[in-house]
Amino acid sequence: MRKMIVGFVSVIIITLILTSCVQKNKNKIKFNKEIVPYSKEETSDYSYEIKGTSLEVNNNCGNLKIEKSNIDKIKVRIEKLVGGKSEDKLQDALDSIKCTLENEVVNINSIWKDKTTINSINVETTIIVPNSIQSINIKNNIGNVNIAGNYDDLKIHIENGEISYNGNLKKEVYF
Image (tube, rainbow, N blue to C red; front, side, top):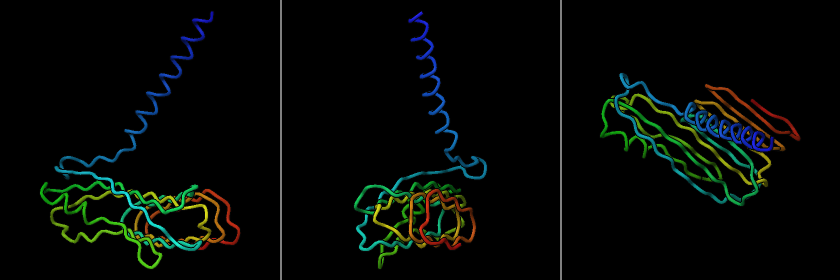
């Protein structure tokens, strides 16, 4: 009887592990090879110290996810995937997608202008902010915004995409 229980539990654990691996691969974006014969991906990490309890984020290139954590710096991870008709321009396009911090504003943007060789771009940005951040102002041109954590004040201006918020606000939210 004991061997049956151990065997049954082992089968359940293996099934759960395999299912989670398959789920991760399902969410991975792949471009259509006929339209986008070449593609390249890259991940960039940034870390910034910020003073104060408020943060502004300007994003013009993809989905944005913001979470709170028990850290002392802002951590930004940008997962980039570009595709096009010419393999030699892919790295230049990846390099053009950057994150900067200027005047306490996190800017995520792409300066790539050559639309003739790069025809597909997917950018997923995750920002982890310290628990001390109590106010966030987000300006997002394209892509979904997913934000989690408790804040005093939250302002989101989104042009194209959806907003998802999981947390408690002490004051109000502006969309």
